[in-house]
Length: 214
Image (cartoon, rainbow, N blue to C red):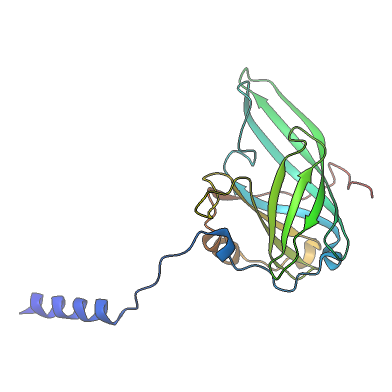
């Protein structure tokens, strides 16, 4: 009798519980920042975290074991139409498979083009660095312009509209170190909603590499 009561109770809970629709991982279905103002987004942003696949480079040459990037800061100079530049500088530590390591400041610059419409899709064309000429689609998912920003990029989109495995990136940015307001649970929610691969890694902020000039 007791087992029957437990079974009936479990069945009633299952019936009463709503059936949630499967989460869409199509990039066009992601919720992004509405009424994005590119010129207001301009300024210096610090990288405070990203999703780690291969730190955060997805393809490594055979002789390189690991690449660790820290202290990244980027200067965004965007016009009202979204055209402009992003200049980034960060400390890169490369570990070779033979055990040797070296550390240096490495700069990467992008040209930006903003697509017109309600969704802030920013195309980034790398103009310096190892991947010169590469095109990356970027979405500003959320920002308050003065404190935090969440940026999503996908290196290769599948025919299904989803990002290819290990080709998606989440970038958490901040301007004012003392007023950063995103919590760990909020960041985790962004990762789930954007179907992000890998785990979240905190990136330290420091003055080891200078802010890129205008």
